[in-house]
Length: 144
Image 1: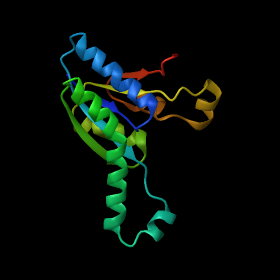
Image 2: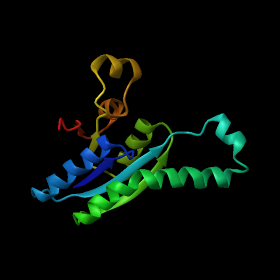
Image 3: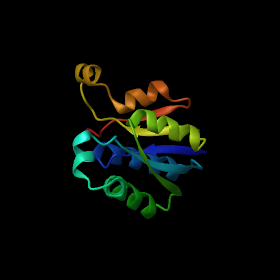
Image 4: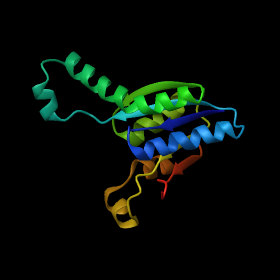
């Protein structure tokens, strides 16, 4: 089974990584695509960057930092994974990765916003849940 494991460097995303590791420890035979998405650059960033190559390097470095803790956790647990840094609107890019990598499922952390705030602002995990062609597990923040 191949699963997309979406992270953004947040504590909520690391809860999803812990959940994925627990699944493997409980016997799930899975390989993960550890994925993060960098949102499109704004006009301000494009004006300040001396050229497109510099902007691409900065975006890549940000994506690599978002993956670091999750990669360390998966490596320490000896869980197989590939890493992918996408760009664009997060939910759309994650769903595209699901299709491109032929993933069978998605694991993603929830931010833990209240119902009203989530309804007003929207949420990447909710958008992925509705757009994904495969099952999605949303991992809520731990209550500890």
